[in-house]
Image (cartoon, rainbow, N blue to C red):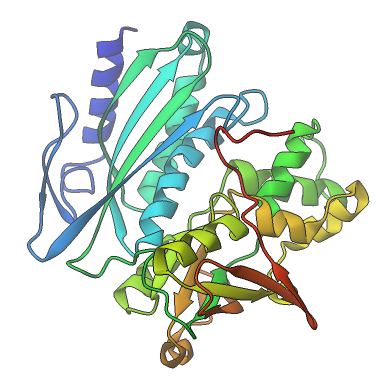
Length: 348
């Protein structure tokens, strides 16, 4: 199979999904030209802003080939971008996907399984693959995911917008993905035997949190459309780092309550036996892809309790100490320094 055979194959796959389906038109916009030319042409409706994000996944930096199934890697490649679109309060619509592959991977069944995972998640959120690129890579897989979404003009939720007195909320639970990464690095793999062992099931749940994250698209849409979030970010680098991003962009500070941070129950169950601190994983571990957002006091009663079965937790409030993020435990308060993942940071 040549590169161009592959492109034609993907093009046919998209077209076969139905010309009346999300591949060619949707409630968001109209795809005038998709896969097969130098660029995709998308006509955005009047009164709407197009939101575009891009994410890069590099082997042995963002994932290990021997630790994640190909289908789940395809899922994650789109999920990380969906999370960014959700954090803007937008609705996802169009995707571009580029992949660099070593020759031994090209000749395996990796690519089919990868795209199966990608398309399964894309179909769930009515996202159309509009194009991309594929290249040989001397060593290691490289994945570039670009995703576009739409939001009513002027209504995108930014990191800048938090004000003193706003409540701080987070969706779901934290620490699971970081715990899954630690377990994977220690050699844990998805349980292949008979289900029913409580620890094996808990380990599986944590590994899946890391390998197959579920973006909070529903929450992002509700918070954006209802104008409930004054600022928002997805937790990709870690709560401590991402809350710091909001504070720096909004020129405010924050204080969170350690007891209020929603810990993944599997983290508590598994990590206590492995000398891992669940709170530290929740504060500094990344890739939970939950949404962290602030809400004006008068809008707090308007918040739904759950969206798509995912609850939210109030963990603190915005303060007037610009750039200062603190964490409180009973009467003790201390500075919470950004401790999440950072590319090119020196690690001891």
